Image: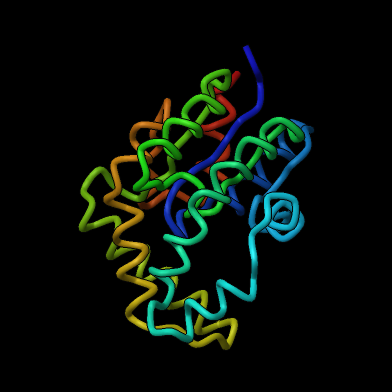
Length: 190
């Protein structure tokens, strides 16, 4: 049994925040896929120029998501092979429309009993609303622009069945602090 803990979920679910806290509490390494994405994209042949052209062609972030999925599946395989401790997946790393890509990720995650989906609530609409509010606060505080397309994408991430297929456990986080979630996860994996 592999002791690596993998956190999955939509944008703003708290994967990075809770992942860092949990890694510190357990005294294990922490890897945020968003932080290492660029180096893995280079290894798997992802082309940033093509992605930028997709955005400017009017396909937006939906087009980039479709383009990146095959690369994401290969990246997941590499990340779990090369990292241990606590790994926080980006929101797109656990959502696949292509059955072959999803099956590939399922095989890569099969040896890991602690693949944990973080969601605010079992109700998808409530989760999407909570995450939208959280993302607006975070992006506004960071001075970053955003559009409704981001929230539509995140609603898609919340509702997508791939997260449920990949997760071995779900933790609902509504009204919990990151520290409380961390403590719950530490007890769960002990």
